[in-house]
Length: 140
Image (cartoon, rainbow, N blue to C red):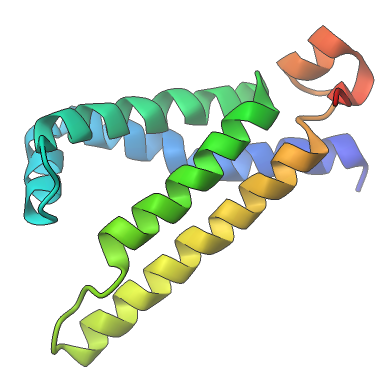
């Protein structure tokens, strides 16, 4: 499969996680706020709005391939932080729940790896970055 097709597919698959998640967080802001409050985060309403907007906007930017390298780095950091905040040490005495949270943490770390690879490769020619900076959007 050609490089640009794989980069497009990568962007589509990664965006498929963040665009709906951001939309759902904003559509159910009270539930999102309650979740963040349950994690003990300060200012859970602000965290809910900020997280929802970030996921939605960053997901859309990855989808269309605009400022991909920068956005991918931000999303990689977000994935690691969100994974540790939301999953590390969660589950208490329930072995199955603890296992689930450990797997979710590892999933977040793996997604961060995908974003780091995308940051390194760039968005490819089939993107706004590719149209703005030339074929392959290979800017350093």
